[in-house]
Length: 178
Image (cartoon, rainbow, N blue to C red; front, top):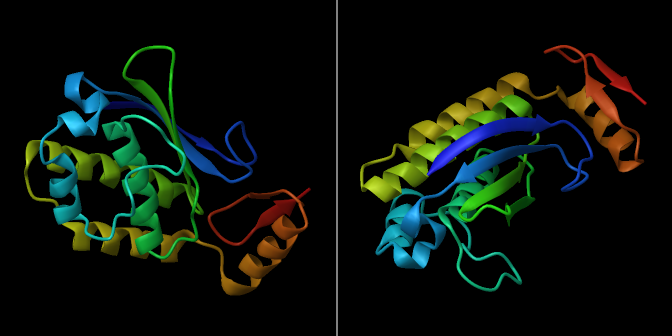
């Protein structure tokens, strides 16, 4: 599995109305269908027991390691306390190459979650250990450091509920609406 071209989609985009990380994932051979990888899902669940169902609702056919990456990135953020629910994996015209899109609430946390999800999937593929507690601890700590404070956060939440776009201007609590 090779993850390339990770980019942040900082607002409504082709995939959803949520902010999201988009990555291109190239899988090799049996990685195109995890059913062909004996014990992969069991090893992944042994390293991350709280990962959700591996099959997207309504998805027919095989799922790839790219799907596992998306579910891992989403569930790592959720376990760290981020309010995220959206992910999508789409195969490109090239065989075994996928676009993986995962919602994030804070860009830095989303990037780190994608990195940890890649490490987790590689650990399951190679049957090596993965320190889940350390990964979740770092994600929680980063989320607490970068997310908006309670008053600014509630103002931004109210604005987004009314369809008003916003952009964060600094690492602090300075935001621009409209």
